[in-house]
Amino acid sequence: MKSARSGWAALRGICHRPKAQWHEGGRLVGRVAGNKMGRNESTLSFEELVAAAASAEDVLAVTGAPVERLAAHARPFPASPSYFTRQPRFNDSYVLLQDLFRKYGKLPAAPPGQVERIAWKTLKDYQMASGESVKASLYNTCINIGKQLHRIHPQLRPPAIADAIDDFTRDINPHLNVAKPIIVDKFGRALGVGRRKTSVARAWVVEGTGEVQINGKNLSEAFGRVHDRESATWALRTTERMNKYNVWALVNGGGPTGQAEALAMAVAKGLVAHEPALKTALRRGKPSAAPGLTALAPAPRPAVRN
Image (tube, rainbow, N blue to C red; front, side, top):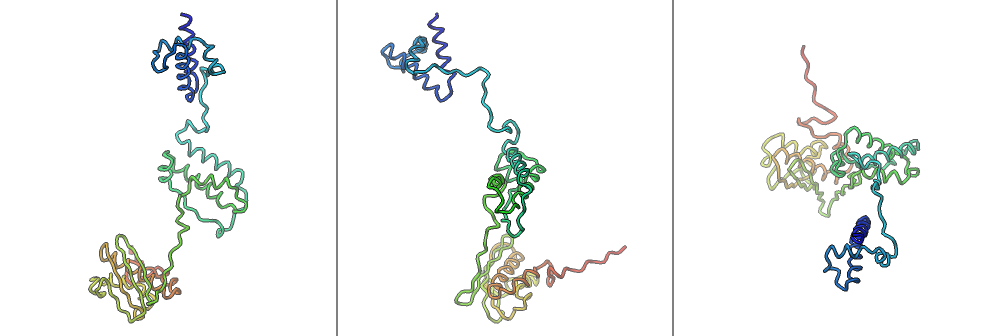
């Protein structure tokens, strides 16, 4: 009876070990029992293992150290104080930003032109990335703190700020994208591409007499409505270049109105490649719903009658 009790005590001591030592403890008892009985450890029964583990001297002889036991009240300590909250990741980031703002918030800010533009995640994107439900008010406050810290002069900004706001920025920064320049090839052609909804237009603009060909058809055959014709040639009419350039275009997708507006964008890009000085005029005179109206000349407001 005493041997069985001591065997149970030895097994409980092995079971109280950390998880990494659990299987090693089982192999240890089997090895001790196999040495005693001259048998393979995998053929021993549970009662034989209990009897083999009863001798604490044998266990100490193999391990060289007594069996370690954990206290009954011992529990793992969480690494973060926000472990038991609903948003542990967001709370840790929020607290970190507040601490950094209290520490570095009074550093001088850089001029607007020297601050690198970054793209911030939307609330929906952050919730999908973190898997946490965050209130919009708290997230907006966190983003405002991050923006103020990002305005600190780059030479004075500590690296910890960049690490703190990294969770709230997008992986791809669209502000770093550079548009591919449109060049005039050796034949004098400039290729412009325009899109509107599901319509895509590719227009080759070359100096000529004002001829326009769209999918092998002239302007009247390609677009039956007058409004669509005026939209397609808007860039040439706005800059008074109707009789100076020829346009050959390929248009597909969408309806006639979408194709005409996509073609207007493509022709404008090709025209700017020939004459870069027209870019300002084209930007200021954006096409509107009514023909002949621009952004600087809106339609007159109707009179209000009492």
